[in-house]
Image 1 (cartoon, rainbow, N blue to C red):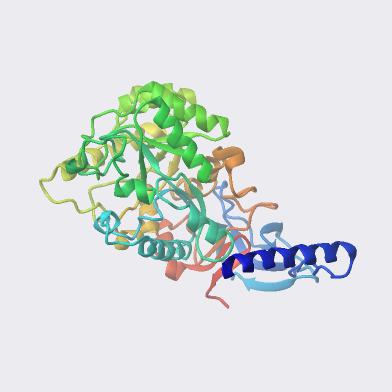
Image 2 (image 1 turned 90 degrees about the vertical axis):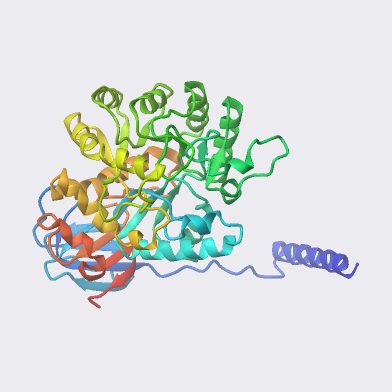
Length: 460
């Protein structure tokens, strides 16, 4: 009863204050305005994200969160801003790196931890916050999250409560029963109308949906939460236990339900797919991007080229960075089959000039997460250093922009040009000549800036 009276008195007090403000008895407080800030980079050579040549020694002025002026001459700093001067000493100024296939909520937490009911959401959140901060300090200023409950983390980063990259979240990966996003055990089957959600669904990592109506509902749920694009599982996966790599998942009509729902929100659908059948079925339904694609054939590459479909691929190889599945296990067999297709897929992507993006797809491995730059540098097996850097900056930014009005960060990214958003790296050396510089960001990235704010400056 006392609590109820307190609520009534509080409401009355607010009403009185509001009325007094209207008639001038109480002055409203003016909005607090912060002083504009600016950063002046001097004596830098610019990789602008699109040109294969560095610029002549230049100056770059950043005011608030945008690049205001670039000149080979001196730039007069504005007098009405707090100014930070950085003498680049001839180092390379380039756009922040973009990883177009991440799982920020699951990057450094193990799969066993994630699926264990003993692991609290708070633990997962804290690990994701750590992963996000470390990712930004590796020079990755933007990421496209391809499954996971990243909405809250994104909001906290955007409002400055946490440190991390810009995030384009997909929300839960939508999967059919037995699909790549179904991590239930056989003991949890069959599902009925009263069966509780699985651990993965409760976390928001996956959403199991069968039939057009369920796919439509789950797609709309992700959009309601703030998804910038939608992801479905179109075929078998390596980490999932009950779907062989060759299987295709979802019918064309089910894909089309997600595509139409996303299109109504002026965004797009991308799918996890390796095989020709999975890829082609998704494309016929209107899907605009394929994640992975390692087992595609030449006909599939031709179709993708003709229809302008994006390929978001990762340089998966059977090397020191491969997830250590037990030898002889079905997962290890699927991993070997998939990685053996990587070389062919990249060759087809180059032959047909596919719109190719890059990402890491790091999952459940804190050590592997630290090798994000190493994973990018592996592209030098198929591309020149310039092509690698262009893919991880301006090309990846083009894919981010495919979200249209669902893009949460209006402005140009992935380039160093006047008017672009100020996501910048100052590199000790020339990465166009030595791509391995990006493998050691702690040593070689002297300045890291996101949205005009400096997060690292080892030259200070």
